Amino acid sequence: MRPVRPDGPGHSHSHSYSHAHIPADDEAKAHLIASANHDRLVSIGAQKVRRCETAIARIRLALRILSLLLCSGILIVLGQVVAVYYKHKDYVVAHDQTPDQRLWARGLDMRPTLVLLGASVAATAASAVLCVASFSKAVRRITKVGNVVTVLFAAFGIAVWVAAAVYFKVDDLDKTKHYDFLSYTCARRHDKALDNAVGNLGSLCGQMRAAWWGALAEGVLEIVSLATVVRAWWVGREGERYRRLGGRGWGWGVGE
Image (cartoon, rainbow, N blue to C red; front, side, top):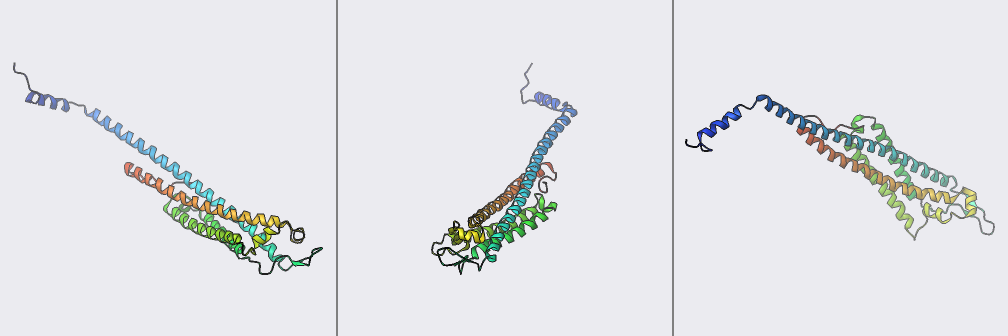
């Protein structure tokens, strides 16, 4: 008997015969299993995206509340300091063995302190508006609206606080002047006669320095707020990928 070649008619008939007799149920089961695995992977990825967006939304809300509290604290501290100055602006202090002197020198430069106070007023108002706006889901959650609002307010906060803090510190470090309110107060913080007249000048000095550090901390908080936008954008890209894979609406609009 002549052998059948592998590529001959006999082999082709056998190969076609085997494919023709694969049960249709097995093919359907294999397709269902593959589809189920695909859906499961997409679902796991989408859940991960939602958890990330929820975490970002909560961090952003916490930053907004913390920023409002810090701005308010700086405003209260500087407001008290400025009130002390204007209340005792024309006071004259009597010394035992030296001529009487004014409590605050004439021509004392209040501009750096007032600039920092103005920055705290503007930033506190902006933070309050943003916290109230956060009651809206469109702002509170990781949405395009929420990201745009965060960028605008964070950029405003960074500009205000950095400009005010730099001006405040540069003026304080100018050795040729030292007639700004901060330098004058800190240089006389151990004068008992002045302390008896206006209170603890050392405390006023410490409050103003704390306000300056608070301004720097505010700038850092606003930078972190911008970082949440970058992170939300990256997570949003992942959400878009899973949405394309699964044909479902994952991604933006999730969060607390």
